[in-house]
Image (tube, rainbow, N blue to C red; front, side, top):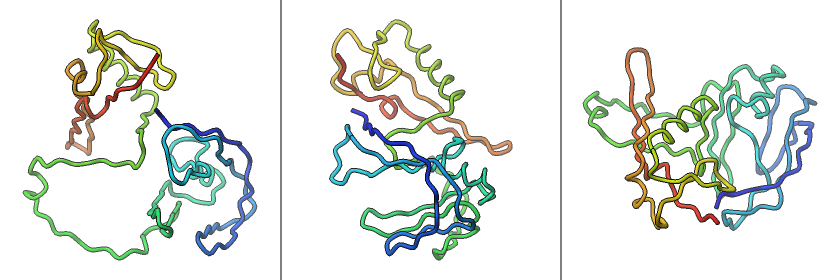
Length: 208
C-alpha cells in the first residue's frame, strides 16, 4: 500500500529564526511561500510519522526552490542536503558554490570504471516520478508490448494495473510478460544506457 497524508495548505511568512537544532538563513526577510502541515497519515508504518512535506523537487512552480528563484532570493537551481535520522546535517539551497565538507580527489583510470559494473540509483524515495512526456512514452511502450496476455484492471492507487488468469504471488511469476525498460543518458556524442528489468519496476498489489 502506498503512503498517504492529508495536509493543510497555507501561506508561510518566512523569517530567519535561529534554532538550536536547525538554522534557516535568508538574504531577504518577509517573503511569502506556500507550505503546510501534514496530518491523518496512512499507509507505510513509521515509528515517528513525518510532520509535513517540504517540496524540494526541481521544475514544479510550487516547489520551495522555484519560489525562491521567482523572488530573486537565489539565482541557482541547486539543492544539497545530508540529514541524519539521528539529528544534525545540512540543507543548502541556491547560491552555494562548495560544501563545507572536506573533499578527497580520486584518481581513477578509465579501465577501472569501464568494466560493466553495476550501478545503484537510490533517490531515497519509494517512487520515482517522470515528467508527463516521459511518463506517457513509458506508459505507451509498456502497455503496447503486453498484447492480450494480461487484463487491465482499475486500482485505487495506481493508473497502470493488470491481472492474469491466475493470482500472482510474486513479481517473478509476472516478469516474463514484460520487457526491460532502457533509460538512455546522452552527453555530447557519448551515451550510457540504464537497464531496468521488469522485477525492478513491477510489484504485486492486492485489489478487489
